Length: 298
Image: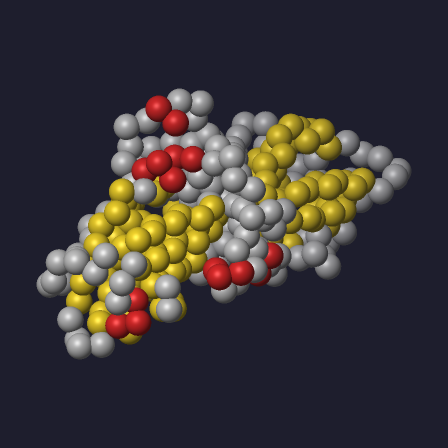
């Protein structure tokens, strides 16, 4: 793990092993906004109209606070000067020089997240590991982030305190397929969301235009199947023109029946995804068991 590496006056790296009388300390108060969806354009307050038949409560989907946080500190030349791993119990940052700094925060306990471009806050981004399928990627695990620009660090006789709230950069969709017939014949199911964002910028939370497909396993019930799917949301968002985009979003589903046969389905969910760019509920109802046979290949 990377420990504290700060730039001293003589521009050599030091590792905080000797006392520095000139350095300035900031005590961070870390907070996390544990939301799994942001209702932006759907006009549906899911928390208020949540249905018990979903089999899980709205609050049960909320992400847990992470175990640790990493902060990148950039100097006035937009170059990484310090990388530090923090916990809520040990969140003190030391600066050896006065000046203006930009600070980028994200949780460091992820498994599938891949960080890129961290040498600059302009290029810092997060994606996830790809699978063997073309344009397919694993669903990202929970990611929080925060960006604090132009922190003026100066010496002071008082304790410096900084409050930082990390907000979600990954969102959850409850994808629910309700069958009009033969739901009791389903023994297993897998699905995929096509057209979701592939990458998110860490400094502003905007997703890039490139898209991917996220696959997932489903749980089976007497109604049909459903799954909780984490994504970065829709591509190229926030974008004031996103609602007029020609992008298309699709949900794929393959179910295995008791007799050993497989049925495949494809659903157009563009309207629901466009109205719910950052998580929500995707409802696919009155599904007939007339899907095609054969293998499932997104």
